[in-house]
Length: 79
Image (cartoon, rainbow, N blue to C red; front, top):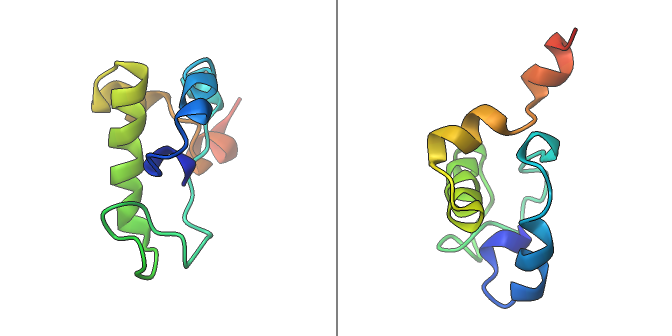
């Protein structure tokens, strides 16, 4: 959420230092949709926007971030 709020640049600087495999993305906040959907109900398909924002912030490709993000699937299937 904070990544898609352009007024949180101080947070962005700290977020860049977090390893990508330690990031969890979720949509549990129904009324805090990312830009450009601010004011609308949050939906799981908006996660793609968050991944794209993280990729820009970390100067990585979207595909790299998708593979690195610590997902629910990783939690269940970890060895």
